[in-house]
Length: 133
Ligand SMILES: [Zn+2]
Image 1 (cartoon, rainbow, N blue to C red):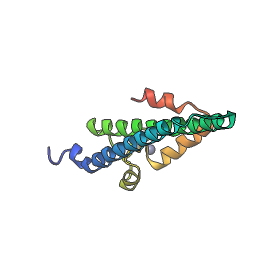
Image 2: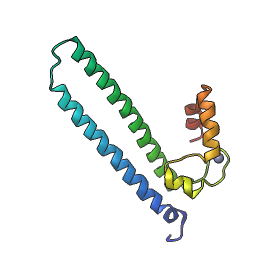
Image 3: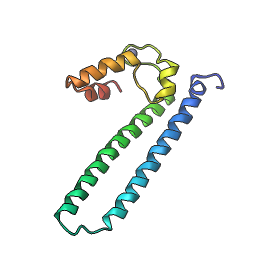
Image 4: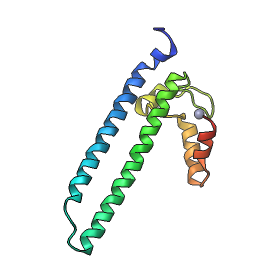
């Protein structure tokens, strides 16, 4: 057990759990700030559109945070399944350097770059990701 693959990634698991906690904390802090700003009732149209703009930014940031949380949860799941650190595209191990920088990385650098290119070209990568689970 001590030398099993799960303990090999124990440090990454800790990093992932810590990051998830940070994101959750920042999300609830944003939410609190949003609730406080709602207490100021807009007095005219200008204030109202400003408030809508702030809500839009908030939702946008929230979506990114949710996406990151999902990626972290997926990475933790891969640690459980012993598939962590292996790129599903080329089946090569992902470098420690990359995992240290982005512990929730699913793909190796070169596959990630190819995926980014395909994504930019409008291919539905999300569907591929779902299918590979
Ligand atoms: Zn790869």
